[in-house]
Length: 156
Image (cartoon, rainbow, N blue to C red; front, side, top):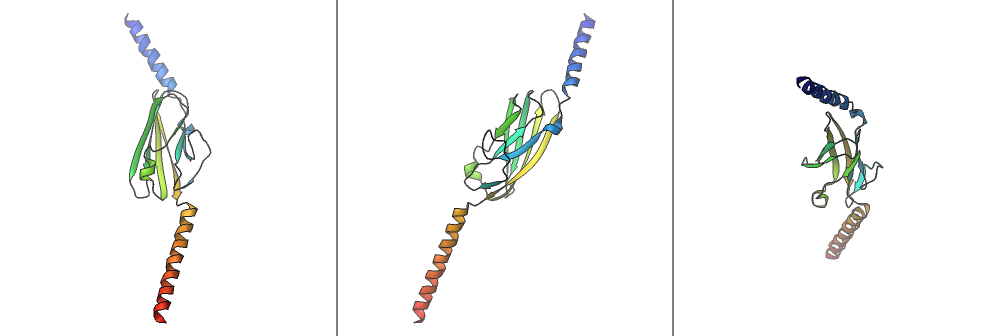
């Protein structure tokens, strides 16, 4: 009986040591434009929602996390799992209320149930949409012209 317990312990230890052969170098995180996309996108309009695509080294049981660091230095946390998916996509649930213009830095990681972990980082930029900027310029020019006309009318 004692030898069967030792044999089981040796078997479990062997499986665990063999399972740690996950290559963390195969882990990547990239900003993308939508759920399910793998096309990297690094510039987003203010009305667009950025997603993260995490590619994991294996489709074994895993748990992923990410910290989204806004331009104002505020950090937001998301997580996914446990899951056996090799590709994971997610975004911040409350993106429409927290979005900020500027450079966002994201640190993401994965913990593997069979042992080991990996991490990577990426960044993307949120810019005002071109139409808003154009309307802002046109509005500013209109106000400047109205002010100039008023000043000229007073000088007459």
